[in-house]
Length: 235
Image 1 (cartoon, one colour):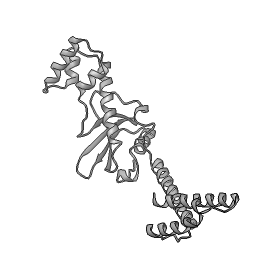
Image 2 (image 1 turned 135 degrees about the vertical axis):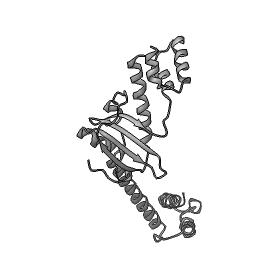
Image 3 (image 1 turned 90 degrees about the vertical axis):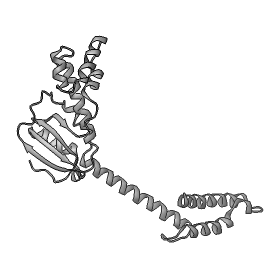
Image 4 (image 1 turned 180 degrees about the horizontal axis):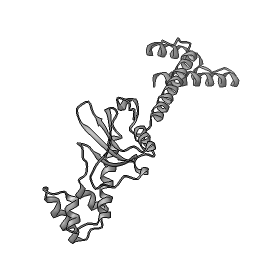
């Protein structure tokens, strides 16, 4: 599979989506500039295992979340967690503390949490090796847990487009407000204040005594227009 050189030119969602559609097995490796290396093991296009230096919650803690543990099982689990010389999952199964189904649920949750953190990466060097991904006793993550709703490159492009549109609209409003005050596009804050004071003085409602109702109403509208333009420029 032809990969881009870096994550910055695509998204992890796009990469995993492409690997899933092609049903590829192997290891996707992401290496950060600081040297941190993350590996996503896939089988037939689905995520089987996630290795990352930031391992996140330990398996024992996750088992407490997914298992309904009575006091006896909780004590057995905590005793096993203190023994770092054996793989925790295998030891818990051997002792009958948890079932294969409960272990699978905890391992899938662990992988999902690790993968969630990898989706936060902005950039990393990419590599991929095809082959047998892993011999660990893991169950693949369901597709709905690692693909739908993930950031995609098209989302980035849409965000850039929307940001550009917003910037253009903001600039158009600024130019329009400056035109109301009779100022050029490069007018500074001081020039804006001077122009507003000069124009507003002639139409201020306090200076309209003796004029007709229609003339006073027109002055009020003009003063409001000038004020709105001024405040939009200095806000």
